[in-house]
Image (cartoon, rainbow over all chains, first blue to last red):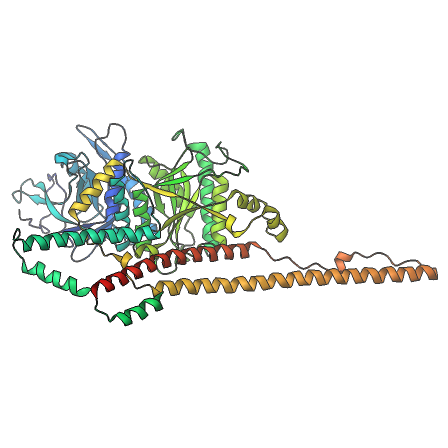
Length: 269
Length: 366
């Protein structure tokens, strides 16, 4: 569905949807950091009695190619069948507080848990359009429909016949995940709780960590070996690109004359 | 500068605990409140009140992110930990960062920032109980007077608080480095007296090993977060960079040793100062003694001549005793040297393992 940006058209008074100032800034890619999702899940777990979902503000930075979401906070809101109320004062205050720590973060949009976009979402989206040009909307499916926690991002576009009442459509955006190196290491560690019975893990000691890392490489190597054997026995057809990777892998172990290596080893010790 | 920051955190926290005492209703039943609160193990018991620290995965991610975005070089980033106490376990469920101390922001009220933040977080049902603070560190140098003061004020008001030390450089090398420290009860006693003279420290029987105690950390995630982790793993398979297995280590080792040498230098200077003090005191004692003897002799002579004896003069006014140097600094330096040594030990253990592995690989190759 093509989104025609309509900057010249000031929306008519009978317009139900938000006024869009221009094309979506930063291309169509949204980059998320894992801390955002963990924070959203945590707010969902702490929601008030009777609330079906939680909403909150997304903060981050915009650049030419993508929009990077680096922070978020939840905003109290009330939703019933016919009406929705969002505490925008609270949202403004929290944003001011957050700005004191990271002055570069802008309001990018908002998030909601749940697997669908409801009519209330349109209204909330309108609230947020007043804060940010063309806000993005992120949904995190905590109700685990289809057995998956789907994470989707949208931006709203006007649709309909120009000059008449316009409707609003949410067009999906590509979601990518961005990790700092240290974040990745942190996530790797946290992920280990998936394997422990009471979801608790301790921090391992120095040599244990080296052992763990080597075990991971060992696993990777055995997968590669399995693949090589399959190709040799004809189960899987050979692929040239993979073959080239394998060649470079084997050649990466540097061939050093044994004596030189001994001296290097001893000097390092 | 760090000292001022620490003072501000303390005053902010004090206000928070005061407000907590008056304002909040019953929060989680097992949490402790401020000074008025009860608490098992309060007072001079030898046992520490916290045996384990349980951290939510979310907190770890937040701390990592905070340093990554706001910390540069040797600047430390700090923040507040929120959570609750369950029996002898301290659970940390959330945290928020503290803004960097900027000189051009003189009217920035840190107390107010903290109050506002905690109030707002309470609205969204996040635990708003202050249970400690976190700080990043540069190559493991965190045993400073400022840290001691801050942790003391925290622990004085809330018995179970800890300080989490996050080492970003070590983490970037392959494995998360997060440690929780508390002051030992002995050190708390000494700090309460505010008496850091040599005699007091000897009486308290404090050595650098008894200053901080490390509390074991476990990381816990809820089921839903586990689901999230699985999703992320499926969707975003980021290639493992295996930094942990890298052999390039001399830079890191070099920096560590450099810091260690600096500390040892400071230590020796301190020792020299102490020795001079001891020498001065003993010299002064001798002088006093001699003076007294001369006085006595003169008095005897005068008596034999029938003249009134000279009045006894206040010896302490004549001989002002030298100031004993504060011993707390040298204790801190010793503690810091200890931390450096432990870091180096861990580091070299890993490296030796890696070098031997490389050797085995080479032998197989040839």
